[in-house]
Image 1 (cartoon, rainbow, N blue to C red):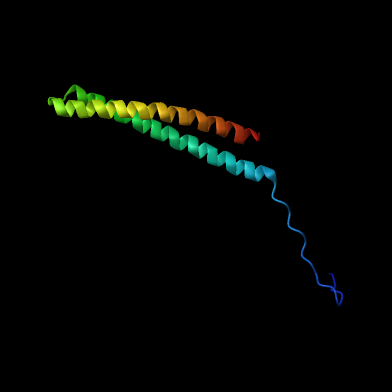
Image 2 (cartoon, helix red, strand yellow; image 1 turned 135 degrees about the vertical axis):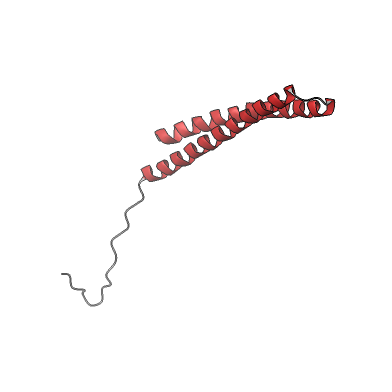
Length: 100
């Protein structure tokens, strides 16, 4: 039991500093979520390309076929960008999860 001395205020114990590992862990988790999110988007884009290619094979109208061709071409461009982003996110995740 401690007694407070008159004239002296009791000061609380200093808070423990936040360990650096906790912030690295949050950065790592955030980076990993980015990778997962980009992988899902990449998979969805690839599925869309497959779906449009199947539909393109069965199209009968010139204008409909042209729309499918455009959609496929646009999706392929998106795939290239998404693959580059995924590679970048994986590098960032590797760096933040290693702690360096």
